[in-house]
Length: 188
Image 1 (cartoon, rainbow, N blue to C red):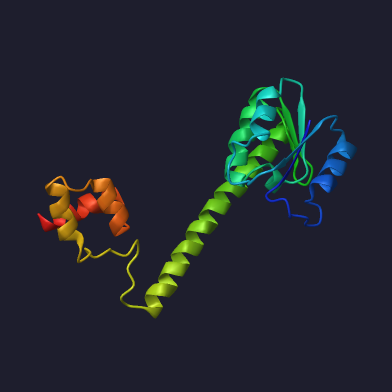
Image 2: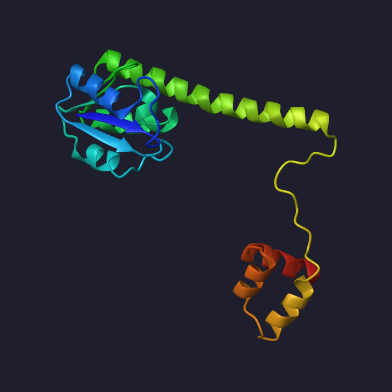
């Protein structure tokens, strides 16, 4: 089986278009290719999930590139599960994952890249926060605290009297119910 994916109908990057991926997968040996236009952020996809469920011991799943399959962090888990079921996963630009020593090595390398990716994201986030603090000494992490609206107490009185529901008051104020109850505690 082959799996080809693009994130959006307009995505025609070199080597990533569905027709190009399909051609490469068929040349690599896939007998049946599943084509899908769906974000790679989600592992549960309309065509991908049924394909994964369909795969049996002895099957091979071909994918042109790792990023067409899934994000590295999710890919490790899915590929490990497939390999444990006896399915070979052949990522054409990366390698073959199966129960052989080389296949297990490839999976360990992939896991290392996933860990590296997570750590790089964390480092970039920390660097961004440090740069912001250096620029603005008043910078505080997290969401900005929303000050209680001047109209809040009027709405609270109407809710208390039963003239208005909390849901309707929140809609009119443009706030969430959790913020409503937070403000109720603050004015109590």
